[in-house]
Image (tube, rainbow over all chains, first blue to last red; front, side):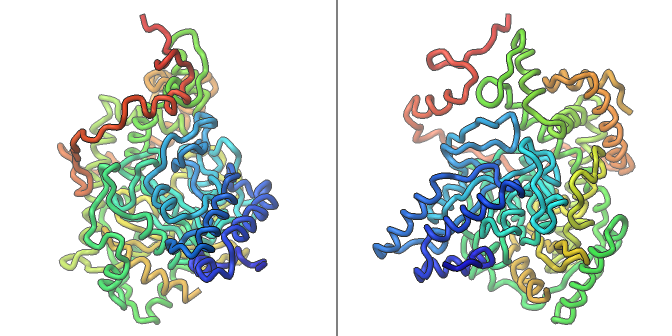
Length: 482
Length: 94
C-alpha cells in the first residue's frame, strides 16, 4: 500500500477510491494506525471512533457491488468536538460535557453521512471554542505538527493539527472570530469561514450565535471548495440560514468569478504588532499576485480599528446567554450543593474552565442594566458600521474591489505557555480575523510561506457576502505562488 | 473600573462559584479587558433601536408533522443528572 497517503489531497484520494485503486478500508486503517502512533504526543484527537473501519468496509462493499456513490464516499474526515454526531460523545473539550452523548446529527453531519464519508474521530479545541491556542481545552493542549513546542492555534486547533500533520485528509471546524483560519495558518492548512448563514449551524454547540459558522480545514483550496459546496445550503433547522440562488452549484458561481481581480489592502490597519516575517510573506504574496495580472489597491475601512473591541463585547455577551443553558440538571456535569441555587453554582463553577468563566462573567457585565448602552449598545452600532464599510468596499459604487487581503494572524504559532495568563495579549491575536465574523462575510486562510524556522504563515482573503467563488479562485492563484 | 464586590455579584448572577483567589485574579483580568474595550466609548454612536445586519430575521414555521409523543424521551433523559419516571429530579425551591 502507498505510504504517502497522508500527503495526498482529499480530491486525489477520492479519485483513487472511485477508480478503486485504493479501498476505503485501507485508507481508513492507514490513518487509524498513524493516529495511534502520533496522537499520544500531538493530542489533536480527543477520541477516535472505533466504528470507522466498519463504515469504511460498508462503503467498499457498495463500491464492489457497482453502486453509484457520491464523490467523497469512503473518504475519512475529522470533526471538531463541538459538532454533534448522534450517539457519539461530544464535549466541546469541556469538563462540563465530558460524558455527554449527542442525541441527534448536526445538519452538516447529516450531509456528510449522505455523502458516505468516514468519521475518524473528534478533534481537540479550546473549551467551548473560547481561545486561540487550544491551551484552554480540558483535555490538554494540542501541539503544532510543525514544532511540538508550539501551539496549533485555536479554537479549532485539533482539526488544523490533524490536517497539517497528516492525521486526516480533511476536517471540519467552527469559526466565531478566527477559529478556523488562525489555526489553519499556524498549521499550514487551508481554512474557510463561509458567509454567515450559508452553512447550517444546527447541531453546532452555540458560542456566539450571530458570529458562529462551520467550515472546512483542508490541504488545498480545491478541497475546501469541494467540501464547502457539500455542506452549504438552506436549512429550515437554522433560522439564520440563507438562500442563495446558486445553492450547491459551484459551476454557476465560478462563471461569475473575474479572472483578474482587484485586491483591496487596508494598509493602515496592517502595521502595529505584526511580525516582520509575517509582513514579508504578505507583501511578497501581493507582489506576486500583481505580477500575475491582479490589481492591488489601497483601501480604508474607517471603523476597522474598533472591530476587536466590538467583538470582545458582542461575543462574551452572546456566550454568557448561550451558556446559561448549562444548569447541571438536564445534561452535563452535576455537582451536588445544599440547595438548587448551590447545585447551579457548584456545577457551573466546576464544569467550566477559567476562560469560559471569564467570558461568561464579562458577558454578564456588559449586558448589565447600567452598562448596556456603553458597551453592548455601542458595540452593535459599530458592528453595523463595520459591516457597511465592507459592503462599500466590495460595491461597484464604493471601492469596487473583488477581494480584500490581510495577514491571517499577526504572528506565526507561538510557544506553548508563552502568552501566560494575560487575556488581552491572546485576544489581540484575533485582530485580522474578527472583522469577517462581525460583517458576516466569507474569509479564507491560505498557506503562503514559511518563517526561517520553518513555521507556516497564512494570508487571509476576504470577499463580499456569498462570494466564496472569488476566494477559491484567488486562493488557487496564491497556492501556485508558494 | 470594576470593584471586587462587583465581580462577586456578577459571579452570583451568572451562577458560578469562584474561590477567593479566583475572584482576585478575575478582577485583574476584567480590569485589563474593560480597559481595552473602553475604546468603544470614544466613538460617537448611539445604541441602535433595531439591529439590522441584513442577515438575521425572525423566521416562523407551522407547527406541523410533530414527532410521536415520547419518541425522544429516553435519549434526552439518559443525559439527566437525576430522573424519576419521565421527570427530571430537581431540588425543592420553596
